[in-house]
Length: 373
Image (cartoon, rainbow, N blue to C red; front, top):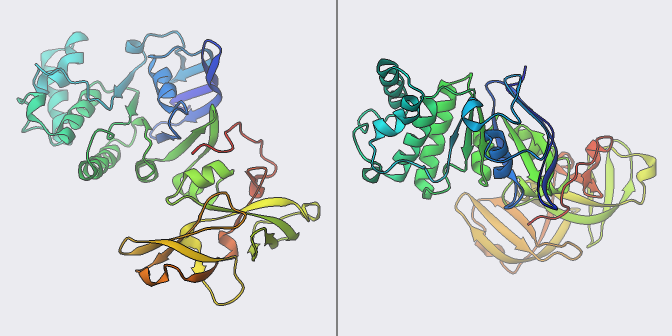
């Protein structure tokens, strides 16, 4: 049985619907990450699971028990906030043990749990310090430790690293990954706007957009086989290029004549009735390679960004809504102002019609925003 099950869950504020038709099952031991653009409802969904927001309609079960009307303190969950929410006048030990004392747990059991969590999080030398004497990363570890000592059924993380600088964010992300490995049976739900956190931490990712779920899958599934244009452009950095065109050949191998010139070949299969259909092809910047032969795209390089191991090339594209971006290995400053032709392996060329991938033509179209930048 899944640890956490949401069935047709919706959330409205008066006449404004924030989320609807949320169906999701999270198995024991998973670390599921909610991602999406600002305002998509990911934190609202987490707060509904926690019991901090009322569910307008639908059902929520935790460990097989319906909890729609169960108070937060009785749901068997622990939440880690982005603001740490530590008591400034209490030591690390007192912060971590506070909820256990409220629950009237024995002093011996409290000490055992706190010491165990402190050892796991490398806080054993900081137990007698106040929050003001800690770094941001240490405070976040205390907030996580406060959750661990409660031994909950489900851990909820609401953008726990957003207040940290870049270096601390990387270090703390690694610590959370190691923590999850040390607690393989613990179920965790994690909200973030950071793709790197989602891709590196998640067992599965839930992409939210337009009031619903755009796609659910493992990090590599979302990267390699996006179901729709939104996920294709949201997952991956820089975003996937979308170029308009028309299908001119169908079958196991599809050919597309592009609106701005050039043509593409894709291993996405199509049907005879797709002939002449208007589509967008999607190609990730890292999948584009320079060519002296038949090109998918040819353009003048406006801007180059040399990042060391890779160089980003920005082109103006006739027919495309956004600039075309190429991502080449190595340093290529000399390409600025030059005409460059690019192609891609047909296995890396996606085909979208009406924003949906033709790989999933028989799947129900999820309710998502067509564009949510």
